Length: 521
Image (cartoon, rainbow, N blue to C red; front, side, top):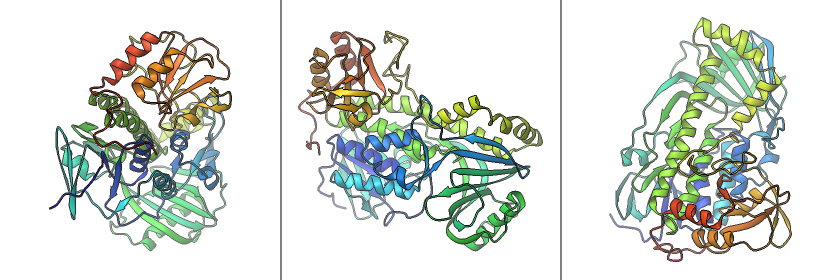
């Protein structure tokens, strides 16, 4: 088996949302990358369909959001019926001080298409029909084996799903349990007398059925637990008939409501979490690292968060600006987020399905009515948006780091999309300047020694964007990471230099970046 000639620094296995987003972030940071996938081409089916505000932010910073909001269904409410009667209308898209973007329903296939287009603009095409069969690593790199050859790379990232070959090759465990045995799914064309800006759910005893509006004329996703006695090998017509029966029983809708099945599937809800996100030069992201219930629409968004967090860290390491220890902070920051998502989505699933008579009584009489309360609605919406994700008190924002003020974000918190001014006086917004860049927020537009310090550690001009908040309320300086989380705040250039030196721990001299240099696109 021969080696392919390659100048690849990173091989990404898996061309789903996580792998594509990671590749976009790495390539925009000037890192040579290849994306391989065992499939023969892009999947046309919807699979995941919830894009939370955090997921939209990530795609926007990658330059891949484009027209997805216009092509999506904007969800304004979740209507929950108990025993056939509407009992709660949870407002899911209201604008709050924290959340300024709507929740979107859009096919995963559409998200992947936009990410592939962005990656192509950055000079990389997905290599279809290339399944990772094995991977061997040493201290210098990873040999990735395919049926038709092998490639040597500095790093391998497995974004290849729940059955990840990369995870298995790295010897990383994936413990977990089944939450619900089996669900039925179908995307259909149907005449449903339901609002198109709402997710509709019906609960009756231990049964439930959900209807989600999809982009397109009269297109819906139907989902329900498989009725007892349902055959394992259901054909699409049989699966659709089973879902229609559930709709008729619980939603009082005609059995012939669906005109055409566009896609059908069955799945089992599992809760699994990788024992580690990194082993040597092999890392994991997305479903290869965590799988959980789809309730709440957190899966694709959590994977996009993994990708953005890892991209800027791996880019710094791959270009020689940081030591490999920085990659340990990827697991330290992202694995607790996945643990919380697994916990919350599993609890939501058990609450919705109602595993015992007592659980169903509590659901119907307490939890569902509570969803009508404005405070509860705001708390649920803000949590599901993922904009409350914080890395405060993590390895890059230890408790010992002074916060200086109780006002504004603390180290590790997400920084809001502030109105800012560039050094040439033109207006902009913070998140628009974070496309694989860091941002240094200064209280004035005049040159500051912190700018030179940040650029010396993080790269040449262009890697660190200097901005001034349009409404500077303090004299503090803020260094914002490419994923929009606050890295450091303070007033002392010396303190900033110390923080960067400690955090990056670079073992090479900035400027002698990569063994195989690649200019930023």
